[in-house]
Length: 265
Length: 295
View 1 (cartoon, one colour):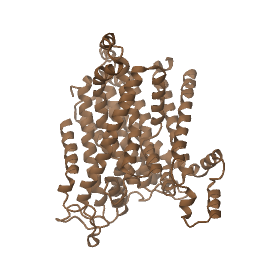
View 2 (tube, helix red, strand yellow; view 1 turned 30 degrees about the vertical axis):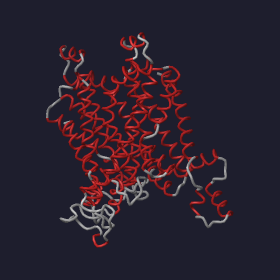
View 3 (cartoon, one colour; view 1 turned 135 degrees about the vertical axis):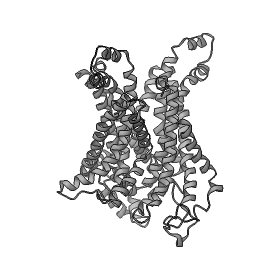
View 4 (tube, each protein chain N blue to C red; view 1 turned 135 degrees about the horizontal axis):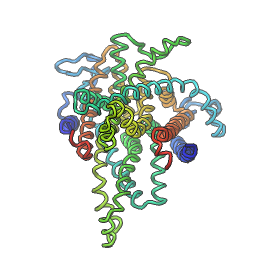
């Protein structure tokens, strides 16, 4: 299942990467004559309300979605992972302050937090990444902290200290590898959440500004013409569903292999 | 139990204060004077001052704050609560028994169907599923209104306006609840005391629903609590798609009008709801599992 999911994700990632070569038309080229035209051989997924090619826009839109969500999750893993390991390793007041701050971040629903940040700072790629990173840091900090607490009591860490290793070396060389499995399972699932958040913000009208194609933005425009041309909303929805399904399958598969209780399914 | 409740309440207070600070911070750093945006750059100083006065921007902040709370939120909050609570009921009422049944019949047809359903449910962004439901049941089949705004004083129209949005949120939640109920039950069903109970001849039904489920509920409560955050976010999208009154539509309107006072208050309302939900989740632990109360 994880392999099939991985294949779905790879399919979307590759077609987004190769968008400049794969897309049959310019995603921004308008053609009044083809306004809301149904799918044809030349425009296989039809045309939107500006007569732009929907297929090309979906391919290009994938770039924005994947770029924003992957960057956000990577940054969140680095910051959240570091904070979680530090908090767990150092403990005491530092631990309480950091995890208290994480609890505050967790008090906002992902989408509402994203809304607040993007609405206040402006809908740019950078701010979208910042917004999604802010919502993802706390869960990664939590998941990195929990195993650190038990691992730091283990004998090999004690041995490292006895040998005079620096705290940094113990954290990076001895604790990090034990934490990374849990973090990777979460990463696949959070990548799905990040893509969903980016699409949702674009759907609300807080995504990267038009005319840049984004999946959420395309669904938003399609939704305005839902009675005449429902495919405008349906095709980008299918693109989102494929990548979400793929990521969830990868996440499930990774979790099953890392949790021995579930391994025999 | 009482000390447990008091302890939980005390923990919630600093979180809430910190949340208020974060919201304040974000709203303060926002560029642009709302009065300026409403009137444009041709406006006179007097007109700007008048609009600032109308918006309450010249009054002390705490006054602006409380004032706003009692205006619009009061009108739409019941709609959002009605929507999320119905979705919650659908999610738990369907998700829990399905998850238990899937665990009981592990690796059989029912289990596979349940797992595929939950995978699909987890993959649907709420606005995508909302649009699909709207297309199928409102636009094609005409079973439900396209715009989910109930007519005044007509309880039946209020119900029919609620069905699609609530089913949309509810089905996604079923996927989450079912999945965690299943994996938690699988863990518990492998325990020694379950085998002991079976060996003693306790009927299968009693073993599953009483001995096993009682111990499998804690992760389910956690997920329901966590999911409420997602549910609230998703209610924003659902309200937009179904054109339904509620906090979500209020957010979008205040965004479009750069109404900071409103936005600020809405964020506080949301954060407040989450803190309350976390508190309720903690309290539910105490009810579900007597062991939690003692710690």
